[in-house]
Length: 372
Image 1 (cartoon, helix red, strand yellow):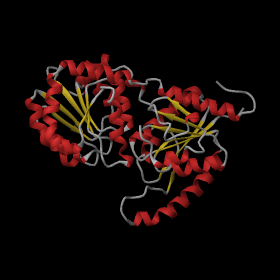
Image 2: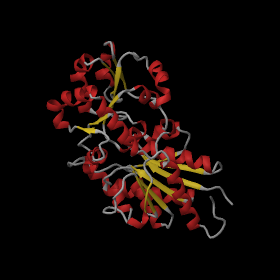
Image 3: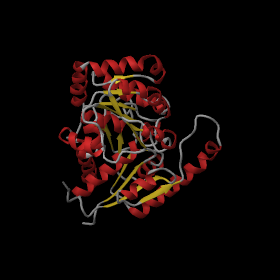
Image 4: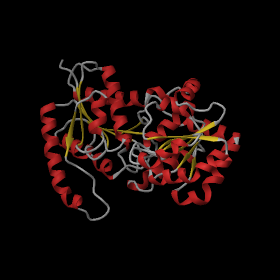
């Protein structure tokens, strides 16, 4: 039997890339001789992150449509045709057993061509409100792994499996790492720590809020570990000169910073929400309103509905943030309630569940010699 071959497509943001890599890593553990190829958008961050993880990647000339008339929008039909043609060529050459899409611009044309060629495809939908690409792809996809229940209004119910989102395995147990985390990040063990997460690129409004509220945080006896994103580091790294404030573009040991943190203020991207369910820290979600289908707000609302987190919209920050945060810091009962409830929503075995669905597709497509 020849080695299994998998194509995985996901990119544009860390929220699409890291689940794709997690799935590949789990498949590699299960099938050490398997061959892998990633497909991404040629000018996006996956072109660096995927090779750093040890996998080959091909880039497509593709981008999303902008909300206003731009030169890129005029080029979109040509980019789409180019990406469909290149996707077909990649599939013909690599001959994958299964194609997996975790979201991002490139997964659309790749999975569309895989579906048209009869190659089994699996969609991994991270959000509580799917984007238009996955809604369209779902009609012909072989399997759909979702992170939230009650998505039957978007996807065919018979194809769906509730798995959760893939997360870093080192986050499954972080409490025992608290002291190590405090030392690693040079935090003051006598003070509480608030962790600010704006995503890999950064969040402008979130950064503006933190800059405005630095004095407030410090007056509450709270030290600040502020991940501002690579687009904003030059603007905010000057605050590293302040005692009790650390500003970084990126955090390479998320397990240790989660372990050290007492409170989290975060955007509500799907991967961040799934990670925060695992680590169980009292969290205030400030979702970005500038994403497709406003899916970050819907992700956060799904947690808030279970009393697992607090939610503030961007237009509420100036009037409500200080009161909400001060109440959270002073109310140990609320902290305990939020932590307990968000942990109930965690799905630590999501990656393995997705791998099992992929194996089912291989066996369904194989006339003999089922694998396990």
